[in-house]
Length: 144
Image 1 (cartoon, rainbow, N blue to C red):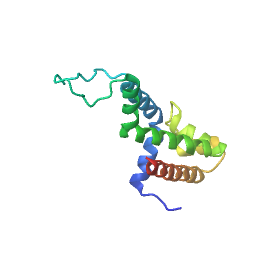
Image 2 (image 1 turned 90 degrees about the horizontal axis):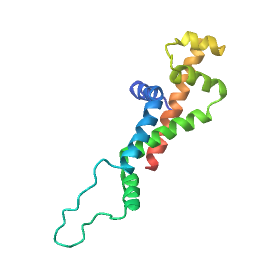
Image 3 (image 1 turned 60 degrees about the vertical axis):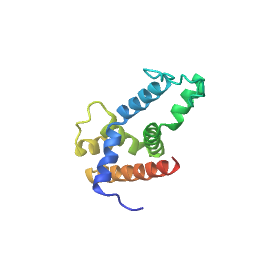
Image 4 (image 1 turned 90 degrees about the vertical axis):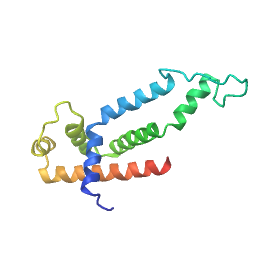
């Protein structure tokens, strides 16, 4: 297991902090692709084939399948969920306290106190979570 660079580490933490917003973004992107604000007008007046899909269901499916930004965000979201689900219960509590509580102004000392561990151990657990997240995201992006 290789260590990740500081900038990558910060990016992973930012993803955990913004998990709820990322989930909302994915949902909104899907809704925008399913029901776009404006339909493409067929400007073909010569009577030939327009080259676009005329069936609405197939058009929606094509937009959903071909949107790479949506796929990347979904892969990131899924990677965070996989990592969280693989964590032991104490690690999950740390993640909840640090990243997903509405009042996440707790210090590492405070989080460690609530978990019954030392501050250094809490930081080690965080490092392991970020490392696992980085690896999971890389694996997810390789599949795209």
